[in-house]
Length: 285
Image 1 (cartoon, rainbow, N blue to C red):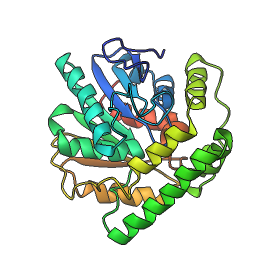
Image 2: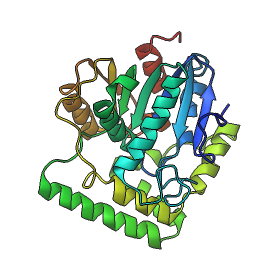
Image 3: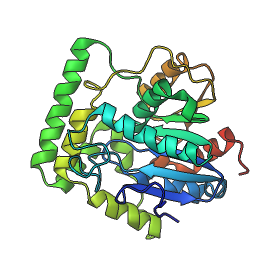
Image 4: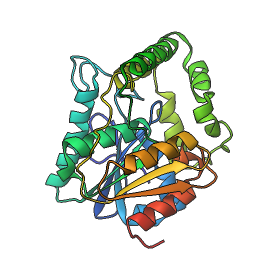
């Protein structure tokens, strides 16, 4: 059952579910929300009974509007102010005496890699799903900035539903278009309502601030000396290659492929991904 954890909630920006003594800090992808992940606990119940989940809506998404009142500050949304905010969530969980397992998907995966570089001592394990190491070549960074600028302008000028249809129509995300309708469970309804609260202006700010053409690429060597699971979908060859590349940068990597899935295994095949996570964390399943 989803809800809010009083000790951590910033104006409803952080969702919480599960009952376990250790916590998963879960970071969603671009145009997603914190409620993208409860289906994993539904499909693999041990992920709810043996883990507590803390999942923020990243700035620019849902009701997390950058600007005055945002926990990332009023001076303007940046990659680094967002990492500071997430890091503070992890520190609070540590202060409460909890083990913290970091999980990030796509954009959230790039943020997770940055956090493992900045503050590896905060986390007991990491799961990186469908994430790239970023872009280092200046010409390619410039191209990506221009591409994300164009998407940001679309977000600002198109009706939200039309923008989301175009966004999900990208070949990388096409697997999400064929997903069956989610059942009318409280979690599924909550997720639909959360996604419907996106604004074009908010998504545009996130696209500009978090673009791989703007954000730093992952470090060549990430000194995180705990287990790290690198995951990609069977139908996502580019990100299978990224997972293999990232494995060369980490001391204790495990690479796994989720069958019958494209870029978003947590949405396209949550049962298989849930079983992978339970095995990685050595939970009964």
